[in-house]
Image (cartoon, rainbow, N blue to C red; front, side, top):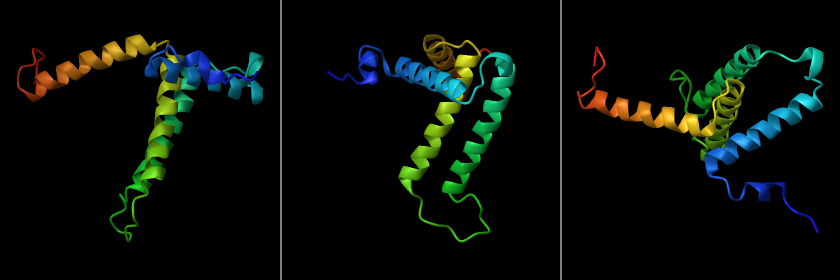
Length: 130
């Protein structure tokens, strides 16, 4: 009987699944491309490389939404736009993993920052300058 490798993720929440899938992909890429052992980069070097890749993917999103005002705009392809946004997510999650940021901690930091941003918008932040 054949079982899908994704069945092991069935009881995890979606953010946990995304982080786990990305860790598996990162390990696969490192092994397939002989990036382990003596050629291994430090976490800081991986984050640098992935940040550059994330910038490149962000530029691809910009191209999908016609940011070049000097060119004749094309119809936005939602599928292509979604794909580019997910490419950004891939690199962002991979950098979180390299930085030791768990899905739980990422969620908590996000929730805290979201609440602070709401306070800022409403003029209720305790932070100076808001």
